[in-house]
Image: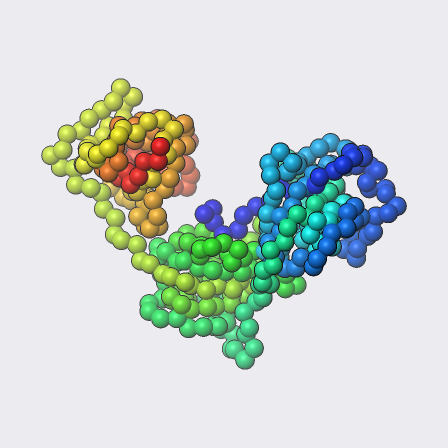
Length: 393
């Protein structure tokens, strides 16, 4: 994932000079209740401007459950930085952080519907009221992200009940299945609030079209676009996150508006298995077989080295099932610690920078009896063409 939408940050916050019980926090008569049901108390006044949507804020935090047990703190991890109004934090935080100025601190009592809701989330039980103290360290002023302007534009209808506006026309061919699109996006709920945006990142997000990497409606919309185009997609729930919603970010059965700009569009190369005719097949004691296409140069690869590789994976009938070349980006991982399948860990330790090996990996050194549904069936032998791009000591 490198995927667009992430789970909410685990929140809980602040530097506390005295630890008072969470029960006291809830019943403190000095607490102010907002119209949303959030309760708060300013515990230290700050100075300057209140943060707004689009601002980047740095905070220290401390949190408890209502039974007075500690859940999380940043004190031993360093400050947390987030962007307001971009779907990174729970609703209680979005509201509470806008009530204090830099240098200030706030106590929040966050009911479940402004926190993590009716589902268990990363150790937080369902329907949990949470107690936060937050110290706002610094604010970098940013720009609020607004939906595309569609005044005067004609709404269009595509297949499967997806409506859209053409905000800007692009150039070149339309995107198609398996193309790689580099996009900027912003997603909005029906009340106009932003739930996620790529604009907090330095670079556009890479999406492979046709695999429902994010949600089906986006795939439909991307195939209406070409390089440089901008569309506003009006996505019904069934083409977005459906009955399940998305964590505590998008509620179940929610229609969304999704603004998309296609920054770049690339058609992946045709991938074929390397020609290994007349080359020696070697076998290790584990049953891993390998063929040296190019030996490579430089130091040997050792356990815990980080390597950058390009690869293509094939079934034994020669059918391609995955390739980094189709995504135009090598992958990076530490060797020999179980970050990849056993056949890769063993085979890559035989290689050098610049080497090209074909690994013939028996099922027991790949995904075994369970496979990796729906992509890899159970008890499946696999073939990988691997090139070592870089070795990072």
